[in-house]
Each structure stands twice: as structure tokens, then as C-alpha cells.
Image (cartoon, rainbow, N blue to C red):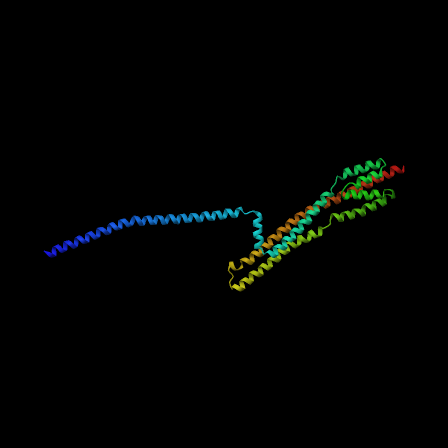
Length: 276
């Protein structure tokens, strides 16, 4: 009888314990699911923040001005060589601007000038013709003035004077062009020098590290490429200015030659008129 009661008691205890375990598991499962859901939400939020940060970084990089980008590349390309290229560009551009201003001021309406000179000579007033040329800027007026200064010495003397002074004025128009060509040649040469130095630095880094991985040679290669790029860009800019200056010089030389021939014709008519 006692064994029977003991068996019933043990069965009751086991049943009660099993029930409590199931209840506990049922209570833990929702909590675990909630924790997992919270962890997933946190991970998703972290990923979104990283994406937002990367997007902001890209936008900020795109918003960098041209001046800042040039400054960054200037520093990355080794300040020593980049400074030499910058000096060549500054002096070259300064000389180009000086020539462009000088040549622009040398341009005049030569047809109107010669028309006024012819009108003054036809009226017999040589001093008025000289005054017109003296008060007009540019090489054409200077050549006409030199010719009028010797109008009484004969047409041959006037022609020699005009030709000689025309050569002087042509030389003045071409002043400093040799320096511009020097800076055009120097700029890519300095860039190539930076290329060679950068490659030497890259090989030195390889020798020190004993490895040829891209991270080892990246610094020297960057110096090599950036200096070359900037040197070529400077040379191209100066070459454009130089060709524009040459076109203005050629136009002024042609104008001087035409004006010289026209002036000789006017003086010849003046001499024939007053000899009669």
C-alpha cells in the first residue's frame, strides 16, 4: 500500500515539473524572438547609417571646388616639382598677357590714319600730317611719322627710312616671345623630370619593403603621373596663348607693310604735285 502511494506521489511530482518546464519555455520563446527582432533592427539601422555616411562622403567629395581639388593634387604630386611647374606657368602666362595687351594697344585703324595723312598732305600741311602720326599710337603711325620726317629728302630716302624703322617695330612686336617658348618647353620637361624621380622613389620603396605590392609603389607612381599631367596642361595653355600672339603679330606686320606701301604712294603723289 505504501509503495502504491509513493508511486502516485512520484508521478504527480514529475507531471508538475514537466508542466512548469513547458510553461517556462513558452515564456522564454517570445522574449528570445523579441531580442532577435531588436538585434535585427539595430543591425539594419547600423547598415543604413553606414550607407548614409558613405553617400554624404561622396556628395561632399563631389562638392569640392576646383581650387580645393587642384590644391589636393598639388600636394599629392610632391610640392617641390609642382612648385617648379607652377612658377613656369605663372611667368609664362604673365608674359603672354603682357604681349596680348601690348599688341592690342598697337592695333589702329590704319586706313583712317592714312586717309587723314593724305588729306593733310593734299592741303600742303606737312606738319599737320606729322602731328596726326605723332598723336596716334602703334607701329603703323610710328613708321608713317618716320617717313614724313624725310619727305623733302626724296622718295628713296623715305623708303629706306620706312623699311629700316619697320624692322625695328617688327622686332618690338616679337619681344619676349622667346621666353614664352622657353616656358612652353620647360613645363613638360619638369613634368617628365618628376616622372623619373617618382619612378626612382617607387623602386626605392620596393627595395626597402622587399615586396612589389601596389600599396608599396602607389606613392612614387602618383608623384610621377601628377607632375606629368600638370606639366603637359601648363604647356598646352601656354601654347594656345603663344599661337594667338603669333597671329596678332603676323596681322600687325601685314598691316605695317601695306601701310608703308600706301604711304610711299601718298608721298610720291605729294612730291609730284608740288614739283609741278
